[in-house]
Every structure is written in structure tokens, then in C-alpha cells.
Amino acid sequence: MRRTARTFGLLGALLIACGGPSTEGGSESLSAALSDGDGSKRLTLIHIGDLHGHLVPRANVRQDAAGPGTKGGLARMWRKIERERQGDPHSLLINTGDTIQGSAETLYTRGQAIVDVLNGFGIDAFVPGNWDYLYGTSRFLELFDGPNATAPWGGVAANLYYSTLAQDPTTPYPSKAGQRVLPPYRLYSVNGIKVGVLGMTAARGPQVVAPTTMKGFQLTAGDAEVAQFVGELRNVEKVDVLVMISELGLANNIRLAQTYPGIDFVLSSDMHEETRAPVVTSNGTVIVEEGQDGTVFGKFSVRVKDHRVQRWSFEMFDVDESIGEDHHVASTVAEVRKTFVSGPDFVNHENPFNHSRLKRPIDSVVGYTAIPLNRSNFSDQDMPGVIEGSSHDFLTDVFRTMTGGDVGAIRGFRFGTHVPPGPIRLEDLYHYLPTGRQVAVGTITGAVIKNQIENSATGALNPNVAAWTGGWLLNFSGLTMDFNPYGANGARASNVRIQGQALVPTKPYRYASLWYPEAPNSVNVTPATNIVVLKDDDGSPLDATEVVARYLQSLPNQTASPELHRIHLTAALPAPSFGNREIQPLRGAVP
Image (cartoon, rainbow, N blue to C red; front, top):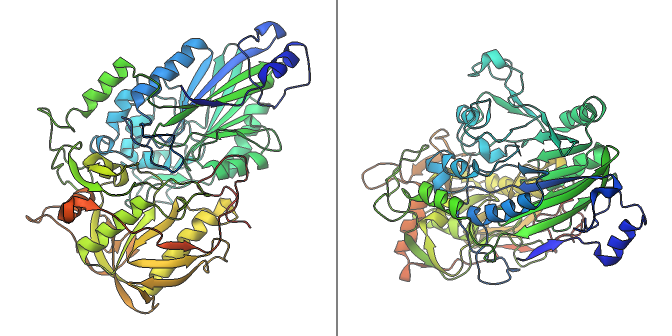
């Protein structure tokens, strides 16, 4: 298989064996020839994250793709993980969140489809991501809390609390007000090594879906909890190895590790970056993030001596066609998918959010695309994902066209999939629109649209990464602009034009985007007037995916070919800061 490893080489192995230069804090290869005779003990950390509901392989159409083959798939992933664990039984398998959202199968089962597969993986520790709260706090507790958890993965989250009565007088959990929902950390004994695993969940929930999604829960930014529990794990618990598993995102995790020394490893999720070379902070913390959709995973091989990390190596494995499928996992995946795909077991599932029905198997071809659809390009590529994506250009065209709006808009969601030129299947649409949203059009002013642009830019490019709000820039249809990533907050976009005419701040525009019944007076979480929600011919709810399918079927040859480059960058994004290609600049837009 293809993999990336930071290796020490033959000379390095000889230096270690002969007592050469100290390797503490380095990323030398832990050669298979190296024995435990030096008194060190072996520990392996295997890291998965940001699976986003992907059960089966998908295409890879990013501009750096090695070829036309597929990547990901849980049956492939498990076969490689199992081999790694068999080769070194002194291991922990850690999942860093955003797991139960991102596909039709997870949406209609409220996460159960992927839980049924992953429960066979033997996950040792888990930190929830922001999208793991999608189905509400009651469902979250069913899945992850207590001895009867449906997903017994060792959940930890130091910065997740039950709301106090002052924060929410109608909290459904008044007897637990102010308490933590999950343990802040867990302790493991592996090969005689005491390992502390500190969990930091997201600083935000998916309130963009519905304001009540986080009812009864509160999240914090995490700084106070990191400071408290790093000290406790080091000074009270006396751990040999401290691992922080965090869905606060790679950029924020780098900031936290630099601010609060004492963490050995940070296993990060949220930003979907691929750290093929781990980030090593000035105080020695080593940080990695594993892309998205299960297309890669990572492994640390660690040596511990005298109650401290002596040396380590890291490998990132590509989950690609060179790995065969594990037959048991493939069978489980097929079982959980059988009521969603073509065949005698197909069921018209009910959407748990809008109560629409699944109208056709998710493997149905609903149209075609003339160009690759994705939003994941690196910052040094054409149309970097943090700025624009062909998939989001396509979806906003749908919203605007199907509603007759002036502008179509979508938030900069990082989740999605890759679709090569050719057929678009319904399941592809669910990877982009997996939250039960509908489509509506309403009236807002040009000033509101301009503020949306600027707020999303500040939330993604601010040099103060602690102020980031999650996700990337909003994308639009019917709107073009020039964009200076280094501009001042509120002044990055210029020459904003709607339907070819300069945006007028006081002018009303018909604005089309996603809509949710719990926020009936908003479109795209934006207050609007004269709202019209698209419905089926019989007046029943119409899921956003079905709107896209019908748009495709209305096109000549049922083929989409969205116009690209709607956002014109006036200056290139900054060069990467930590040795890896970046989708979103990890220090913000700093010249």
C-alpha cells in the first residue's frame, strides 16, 4: 500500500542502536530491529477522525489525486487497522469525532448505521465532534454516555457541560445542571505505560441546523480545561504519556499546545487537514489530523522510558484500492445499507427532521456533472477550498434556480464528498446535504448579504485563530466578488455584484438557501421576510436532496456544468506554516 512515513533511515537506526544522539522529541523511525533491550516500552496510538458517515469508498477528484481510483471505505480501513494492531498489541485506537453525520444512512438512522459498523472496531477512546450533536442531546446521551451507551467508545469531553439553570431555565436536565456530561479524561495501562487521554470536544454545536439542537448542553472554548487537566494528569495522576484528543481543529490545537506545555501528543479533528508530517511545537507537543471521510488514518509508534516519551515515529496510511476489504466489516456495511439501496429490501425511510420520505434508493443516478464536484483543494491550488468549491457553486445554482431567487447561498461546510465527471447518485447529494434541511427563498437586504460574506471571511481567515467560527467562506450563485484575504475585518470583499449589477446595501434581494422548520422566519439562519418554502406537489415536505435531483432532471441531458471562479482572489493565500499543504491557512491570512 502507499503510505507516508517520517523515517530515520539506516544511519539513524545505527545511531540509536549504538547510543548516538538523543532522539527525545524527534520523529525518528522506530525500526523493527529495535528491541526492548534498552529498557524502553512500546506504545502504539492509532488515530481515525472526521469519518462523516462515510461507509463505502468514494472518488478523489482533488487536483493532487494520484489517479482515478477510490479512497476510503470502512471495510478497507479496518483490514489495515487490524493488521497494525496484530503487529503491535500494545495499542490504543482513538476516534476524534464527527462520525455519525454526513450520509443518508446516518441521517435516517440518527447515526446508528455507522455505530453498528464501528462497534466492531474496538475503539478505546472517543471525543465527540460538533456534528455528533446533530440529532439532539437526548440522542447524544443514548449513544455516548454511561455503561449502556449504544456507542461504547470511551467518550471524553472536558469542555462539555449540562446547562446551568441560569443559562437555560427550561433545561431538560435540571438535576445535572453545571456538571460535565462525559468524563474529562480516562486512564489506560498499556504495556505497563500509564496513558492519560484528555478529551476536548468542539467549541460550537450544530445550531446552524436548529437552535434547539444543543438544548441542555453548553460548550466552552477549552483553554481553562486544558490548563486544569494537563496539570492534574501530570502532577496528580502522574501519567507517563499525555494524549489530548480534540475536535477543536488543527489550528486551535496548535495554539493550545503552544500555550499549555505538558501534552505529548494531540490527535486532532475538525479542519480535515492531512498532516503527513506531524506538527511539532516549540515545547515538544506533536500534533496530527487525519483528513476526512476515512480516506487516511494515522499511527504513532512511541517508546517510553523512565516515565516519559523517549522517541516516536508517525505513519499516515492511505485507505485506497491497494487494501482489500475485511469480509466481516463489508458484510456489516452491506447489512446496514440494504434498506437504502436498490433491491427488495429498500424502504422509504422517514427523515427524522422534516419527516419527508426517501423517494428512491440512494444508489440511483439522478443526473450527471460535466466537471468534478468537490470542495477540498489546498490553499496553493486553483480555487482553494477555504474560498470556493465546485460542489458549492453547483448547489447554490440549484437553490437560486429552483426558487427564482436573485442569490443562492450556502455556508462553508467542510463535509461533503467528491464526484468525478459523470453520474451523480442520490447518496452523493446526501453527503453534501445530510442534515434534513429544506430549500426556501426570502427577502433580505444587500447589507445583510455583505455582512454574511465578511463574517464568514473573518471566521475563517482571522489571524487570531481563537476567534474562528468554524467552516469556510460562504459560496454563492448569482453573486461575484473580488476578495483580498489580507484585508481588514469587514473589508475583504469588494466589487460585489448581483446578477452583474453592483450590490446595493439598501436594496431587497430574493435570497435562496437552506431552511429548517424550527427557524421558520429565517433562511440560512438569517432573518428574512416573504419566505416561500419549496414543497412537493401534494404539499408535503421536500428534502433539499430531492430539490437538487429535480433540478438535475430539468437540465439538458440532465447534466450540470456550474460556472466556477465566482470569488476572484486578489492575492494568493499565505504559504503553509508547518510543512504540510493546507486547505485553510493554519495561522489565518497573515502576509
